[in-house]
Structures are given as structure tokens and as C-alpha cells.
Image (cartoon, rainbow, N blue to C red; front, side, top):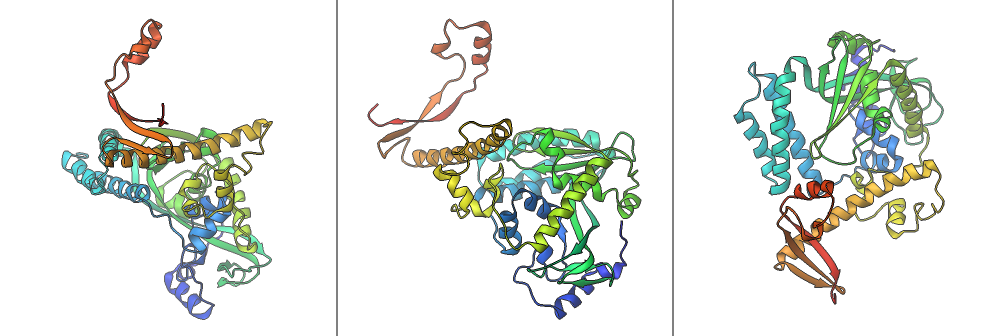
Length: 406
């Protein structure tokens, strides 16, 4: 692992570099003017889709929506909970929980606020039990990633020239980039000198263990925590097997995966190849995947690949006799379209409520039907298992759409 003098990583040196080199239009990530670096999330986005990286980090496009705003509020509320937890010997109390809930209630979505409040109660109970294992929340981590020789640099991305120990925007024989990020929560594992890396999401695609094991973000966190500076700071054993944990607030789901030395070294090699592509290749091909709805290019269908899938003439249509690999990729596409369908249903439901419960349009009739829960008539005469499942049904109102003449 390369060790660089502290003054080369400081904001002062970055400002000096920015004053002597051509100014970039976007100050984010590798393209930042004052402190060029890669965030762990930036590299994760680039690994999923280079076009997403191009839009969000180089062109400065961001996703602005009610869901995104609510997600940010949830994340801020969780930060407040964790901060309160760190300063209290007796753990979290009712006042801490109510303060966190108020942060989310400002957005006015009663159902999402109720879902978040339920999660907060469960999280507080669990966090109070686990607080002796918590190393910290919003934990800053960093490391230098050696990427080798840079042959060309058409976008003039700043990299550290290791031979001259100075920033450059051109080719060089030995280069490194700085990785900087924050871990949502860092815990000690059962051996006390190992780590549990916790990454939280408000909602979204729930990864399988295989998907989580190949996650660039989690893998690079584990890799960074094995570098000498981080090992010394957090008193870790770099030879230990760490644990990566993904948590969904909305779904109340946890997925865990083991992150050993070999796994994290593989992730670091993948990251090096990806960084070189970001620097040396000016093209940004788009890829359809399970997180397309989080990309700003999906808003208004500005991505050609995403638009083709919506029209039905993209790669999804061409899968007539799928292989096993194509079948797995199809699952990711279905996830995206299920999310689109749910969002559209929510918007239509709002319109139906606004007009009094019935909406007739384009030859279709939409209305809200109330279910009393319990045992519907159609379950009469069914098996014992079917009856038990039916009795679990909860009261509620669902959206029902049919042809207007039926």
C-alpha cells in the first residue's frame, strides 16, 4: 500500500493544483476542483453503469423526486438516532425517537412515516442491545488505490503521479487515486478485532448474497479497512474475515455476506480496471439494470437504453429462448418494471381520490374498493392452509381498474 505525505492529500495542495491547471466544469468526485477523489458510492455507480456515472458526477445531473427527498430525510433521521446513541450511556430514549420521527413527518406522507416509525422502534431496541459493539456511525474511511500506468487522459482527470508525488491531468507511468467515503455504521465483530460494515438503504432492490458479495461499495470498504492507516485507527486485524451487512428500512430486511481478504483483493483489482476506464475512455455506454430508477437519466426517459426497454424493443424483447444467464438478467429487468408499475399505481390512486373515488378515462374505469379483511366468500370450501392464509388478510383499500363497459 502506498503511503503519501499528508501535505499531498490536503485541501491546500488541491487548491494549488486547481489554480495551475485547466478548470473543470463539474466539481464532484474525480472531477472535483479542490479535492479530487473517488467516493465509494461513485465507483459503485460506475460499476453498475458508466452512463450513470457520467450523468451524475461529470455532468452534475441529480435525481430530484419525492421519493429521493424522503429517502434523504430518512437517512438524516437515522444519523440523528445514531448520534444520540453514541452520547448516551443508557441508550436511546423516547425523546430521541420522537425527534427522529419528526424529521420524516415534514414530508407529509402518512404511510411512509408510519413505516419509518415502526422501523425506528425496532432499530432502537436492537441498537440499545448492540451499542457496546458500535465503533462509530458515519465513519470516514479513506485509502489510496494504485492504478498503475495511465496511457491517456482525454477528460483531464486529476491523478496522483507517484514518481513525482504531485497531481497531474496527463499520462504518467505510476498513478494512484484517493478513495474517500463514510460507512453508515461500523461495528466490531465477534472476534473484537474484526469489523461489521453496515450499509443502509431506505428502499430499493433487495440484493441476493451473491450480488452483495460482488458489491464494489461494500468490498472496497472492507479493502480500505485493511490498509495500514485504517487498521491502526480502528485496531483491526487485516487478516480477519469481515462481515458486510445491507439493511433496508422500508422492507425491514437484512442481508449479510462474508468479506475475506481474497474477496476484497478481487474487488480492488476490479476497481483499478474500472478507474482506468473512467480516466482513459471518454465513452460512457449505458446498461439496463435493477437500479435504473435511481439514475437521473431515467427521469423523462433520457437514457436511450432505458427508453428502448420502456417501448419494448430493447434487449428484453430479443430474449426469446433465454439461457440461464439471460434468465437471471431478466429478473433484474422485472424488478425495475415492477417498481415502475407500483409508482404509476400510486399516482393513479391519488387522482382517483382527488375526483371522489371513481375515474373514467381512455375506455377504463378506476375506483377504490374497500376490503374488510378476514375470510372472503371465494374461500368457502377451501383447504385448511388456504383458510389460515385468508384469515391473515388485513383490512384496506385497493385500486381496481377494468374496462369502462364491464
